[in-house]
Length: 330
Image (cartoon, rainbow, N blue to C red; front, side):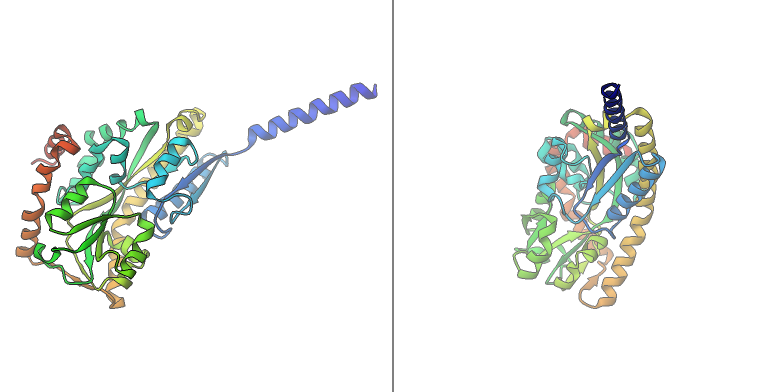
């Protein structure tokens, strides 16, 4: 009798343990390289909040900002290996994976407005680009904005002639490299987490960033001048490990898609305000002098940089470039 009870108890405990294990929440590690108070950082936190709410705790999202887990060059490999489940890398990061078409977003002056941008991210071109990630073991979920970039340096940079010989940090992107060379600057590829120190020590003379990134990383403390050039766009693709995503229960995946849709609206809605507030704060600090180009100077920038489109046509893909121009009505 005692043996039977012991066996029954052991079986009950095993069942209870298995049940508890089955009820353990699904963990999503969401890694990114910027500060929590940037548009991307806030978007990640909003996704965490909504994902945990909509799944009734079936999913736990752990957000790791500021390169706490991985730097720029490491994070995509970590995602493919399953070490993290979700990332939001900048659109320039997919070139090393062989998906160079995303570098269409890096072309200078490709977008004249947010309306232009939406025609691509919300349209067929944006969808086709995300689909190209599938063979790499990655599922693309959404596009998140940061904003249009300013150019900074420790000397005034009002016209293209002012860039001669300046060492400027860029992300790893052949398009951005060509952009800097068109300005007669010297491009320096560097991880985002290393930029402040490089600017501080003079390893590089300047860089390009939307105001929110510049402010939250305190780059304005080590840059004397910046020009409101709006020459390029910085955005992100929210991506997930495909095997992990496909393996989720259908109801959980549906709830996470809902959370991502709402987090995307939130992140994109706040992006402009975050950049406006950051720019105002940097101006108020008095540490960086911000310059607004005249109409004539802006045209000089455009005339100097537009040839990069043709130069990079074979890299981003002629079909992708033509489809983008068509979507933009050009």
